[in-house]
Length: 137
Image (tube, rainbow, N blue to C red):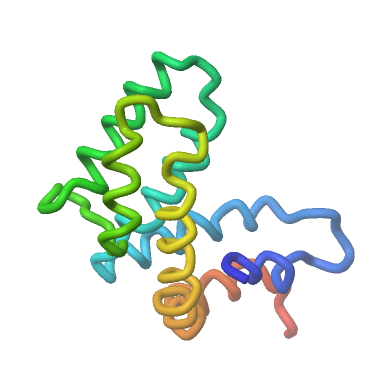
């Protein structure tokens, strides 16, 4: 599971380490370095979008997400299939809170299968581990 490294990093003698908060930041920095940070940004934007209760705010935010991530040739176009893209386009005028759910699942799968395993092998992740694990000297 994506972000499962938090389980490995939690010190056994403490409830939570403040350094664990660096994990998502480091992963996002890694994705930016890998030129695929649109995935994590879209995923996080969807998490925020799902919490919007106001119909008008949801419509406004949905159109913004479409322009940034879904529209072909958009600045941060995410890699989703045409069927998912077409469904979003059909629903964008009256978007529900689940309008981007399928696209979010696809992006999550891309991160989980592709970039996240590479991140776990990266120097950035190893450095994160070093900052969190106690010195064994």
